[in-house]
Amino acid sequence: MNIITLALAAEKLAAGGVSAAVVPVPQNCLNIRDKAANCDLCIQTCPVAAITLEPDIQVDPDTCINCGLCLHDCPTGVFQGDDGAQRLLHCALQLADREVIELACKYHPAPKEGKHRVDGVLITDNCLSALGVSAYQGLFAAGVKKLIVRLDNCAECSMGALRGKIETTLDQAAQFDGFDGRTLIKETEKPSGRLKARPVYSIKHPPISRRALLRKVTMQDDGEAHPLVTAFQPLDDGSAVPQERRRLLAALRARKQVDSGRLMPERDFTKLRINDVCTACGTCVRVCPTEALGFYESESAFAITFSTADCVNCGICIHLCEARAIERSGTPTVAEALDQSPVTLHTGALKRCQKCHVVFKGEGDYCPTCSFRRKNPFGYRRNPLENHTNNA
Image (tube, rainbow, N blue to C red; front, top):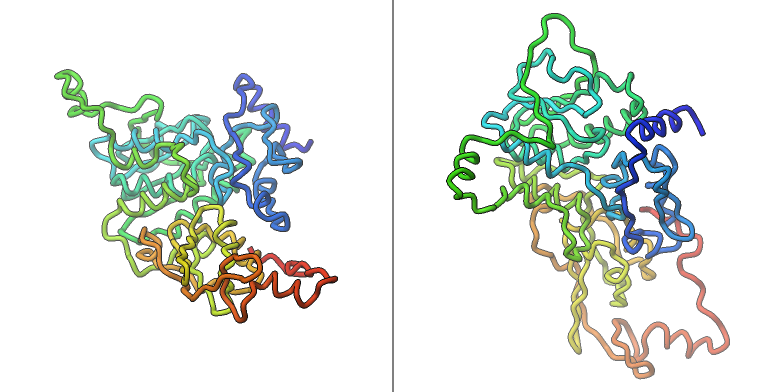
């Protein structure tokens, strides 16, 4: 156990040894769908080695410090838990003025004083590592024009080992800067000189606006939440699209004057195309962890559709396509990523195999499998994935 692990474990002990709130959903893992995927992003992300992949994905509650990194780092949403993003947005929306907001974690010793004149300082109920890109975009969608994130105390914090991960997330969030005049600032130096006293609000105890208080007093509160807060609510509706992706798209759709022609981040978004060697086997659709691909067939034709908004660029469809018919075709624009309407990637005519009666696309009267067996009655079909490099 290294010094970083010891420091983080000490923080957990100081907090009372709270059990981890992170729960894995193994069926969302790429390794379950493709044994050759060898995805270990969660292993690399976890700062205390609390995650294991054998025999299936598990989180050790005694080791986990509930930092929340895995909640937004896993592209397919394997991990579920409370990152505080919904409470953060709710708190921000209660402020009458929220153009300039400062964000600090609960471990910061002096959030009331700073060099910036702000409308309010919001204090999270966990380390900032729990927040993903969607949380920062959600604040911008809530009307924040300048967001200042306090990292100046990380070096002295027992959770300070997570600062690099937090900065990586902020750099990813900053890729959206300039869409509509919003600015994200990392405050890494301790404030000096003449400091300003600012109002501080904990997201656990958000302020109540005058209008909201009046509605409660007069019993006119209909209980309806702000649409943005509702969009950030954890859902258990069976959706295959990861929570982080749903939240990010909801935040971008709520923002005004977004540059629709700008390209989305290449790391998480891609466009696909399917060429004519497609055999209509449907493997790509079956293995897609977010159901971004769809397969529709009739007795004589088929179509494969694709939703850019739902695709997390995991590459599993490309890896498992035996015919090598699928490939990436660039990065989508903001408008393409926000469009919820699936596009048709490929269509073709279908035949029914005279041997097994499965539908297929291709020459002759037999599907590829039956055709091979007729030609090689005593042979075997070589694994097409052998020596194939995973480009995910």
